[in-house]
Image 1 (cartoon, one colour):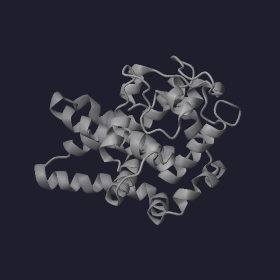
Image 2: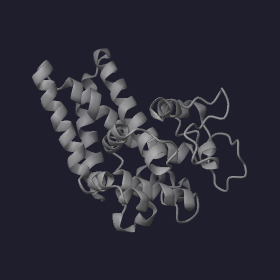
Image 3: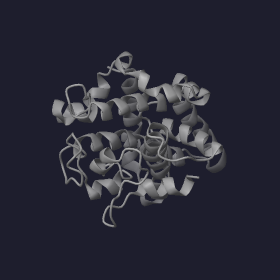
Length: 251
């Protein structure tokens, strides 16, 4: 069982299952803000389009914030995520693609990360990020960054409002959901939906509805055809919320 599953994914789901029964409409705003921050800015924009594909340029303070939010997205450090994702593009849907549905839907969803040996992640794909001292620090202190952030927000919430609800519903639940965003893309973005670009040599597909729920990640055939584009929609029917967020912060 991988360290990431034991130290991040499993405890998030234990905490999430404890608080979900008490979720009320009062906390929807907390959840939505956390969802946009972590799944949107953190993963779909920061981790994927900015750090991994270098799809746009932004300002230095935003660079630092995106790195922190990317870690709170709970899918690994940007260095780790970038290495695995570039490898995915290089070997998409062949025998070396560790999270392709070709190896089974459970494996594509969570199985690959539960059993992943980080020593087998091709870190050569992350040389650009490794050269960034901030990214190297996030990578070496990833678990501390995640849980110290939760602890800090918990303390602030207690001091300001006297409870932990904003942390539980504004951080824990969005972080838990974020661990499902890319697995959903792994499955439904590779075989379920339609294709605009048949010249892409893999099984990538688009799904408009899931594209909305994953900040554009499930417009996956479009992304594989144009990996360095920051907006994945190709027409007005393909809405890409992640691309819109990227537009807000790019230079």
